[in-house]
Length: 313
Ligand SMILES: Cc1ncc(C[n+]2csc(CCOP(=O)(O)OP(=O)(O)O)c2C)c(N)n1
Image 1 (cartoon, protein in one colour):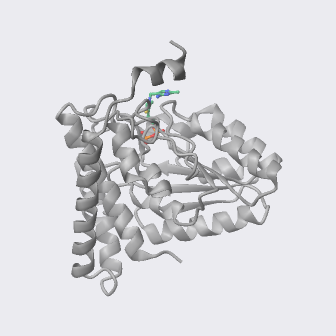
Image 2 (spheres, rainbow, N blue to C red):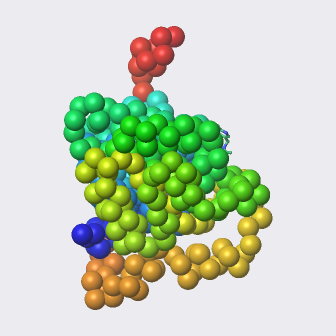
């Protein structure tokens, strides 16, 4: 059963984290590419609410929300993005290379579709070890056109592997709207082709995402094989900080105002998420985030020796 206050906390934290990362980027404190997931917070929070530490998650280039929802490691994430030795990848990875083995986060990935077969490997590991753990991958609708997804779904179905595929279907890949690149928007059909059960989910409703993820993980943990979720959502920010697109302003307004995930959650549960409760959560989030940023900025950069040992140079 989804804890609504907990879900509100993490969705608020992810959104604030993204806004803070954007301001650090603009100040020149944060190096490299920055892919923000503002608007999509309900997807990782809903899915990860039913995952355990021993379940493995593989992510994408747009990974901050996935990392935070799976690990709750705010401090390690911001330090990593600021290139500090205290970061979750020791400051050597940055935004697209977050990693936390203890919490089952086996990496962000700058290669579109790159995390999908790695999650299959994690599913194989659980299968061989005889556990009821899961290999889960998030991927975009653009990545769903990569051959790697089809190869992975085939093998996962063939071997009945504990594999959960979560398509974050935000309707656009970089600046290309999905209908321009994709013959059929209905991603559940990809799974049906391999005999894998699949559901289409409202990705801006965290309760719906969590309920679908609960059905999926129950199926997988019973040894019945893989499951796919086609989660419909909307990316509010441009693809990579600066790359603008020509999306319909009316559609953008609908998603950001009417269908906003945080606003919807508040409105559906006014008796639990009272203004007192949400204000307290927002204050706690702001305080935690600012102290994480301050600690990261005060932390040392990785030593050159560490790079030498890691990369052999
Ligand atoms: C194999 C590969 N091809 C192209 C790119 C360039 N690229 C980076 S993000 C992106 C769009 C991905 O879209 P989608 O999978 O829908 O994810 P979203 O950005 O919407 O989260 C592209 C084409 C890449 N990083 N890797």
